Amino acid sequence: MKDSRRAKVTEAIRQACVSAIIRTDNEVLAGDAMQAAVDGGFQVVEFTLTTPGALSLVERFSAGDALTVGAGTVMSPGEARDAVSAGAEFLVSPIFDAEVLVEAAKLDVPMIPGCYTPTEMETAHRHGADFIKVFPAPAGGVGFIRAVRGPLPHLPLFPTAGPTPENFIEYLEAGCAGVGFVRSLFDPNDLARGDLAAVGARANEITRRLADWRSTPAE
Image (cartoon, helix red, strand yellow):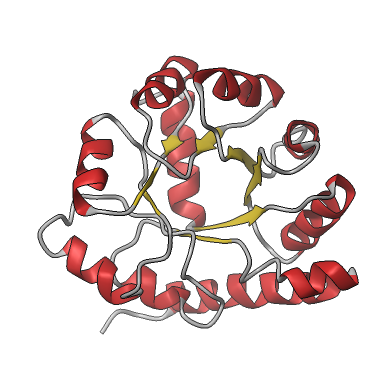
């Protein structure tokens, strides 16, 4: 796997550390909002397949080399193939499905299944998951992450529900491989108003805080 596309994309996601995840009922709005996030500094983006025109958006945003583009809510091997054919470089699911993991490996792309319990997480890891999407948001927030990583520090956790512009650094300090932003970046009220400037400002705040954190010497 060392020189595979999967390995290179996995490393790109790990280096970026943050991803922007859009889920809307409007293709044009989804594209415009994601562009605002990209303009604000995001390099890893994900379009959920429940968004109208998601595959077209994947194709459009993956046209260049500047972004790492993925498809979310991938629920079957067929959807995995369609997403990769459209240009998706990684796949995400709200659940753990071994068949989808196997298909992702065949397609040579990272797979990030959704898991909630430590047993699910470890099972997905043993099946070859590249990251573990912690979903839905645990009641304990970052405390839950710390509790899981205590006995299972090898798990590459990537929560996508719970992190916000205000608290995501806490998740990274707790050992998460990265974090994803959905509603906390693409606020539904902003989208309803077409306030893309607010999305861009939030994206800039997140990437700025990440840069500041990375540049601060560890104590």
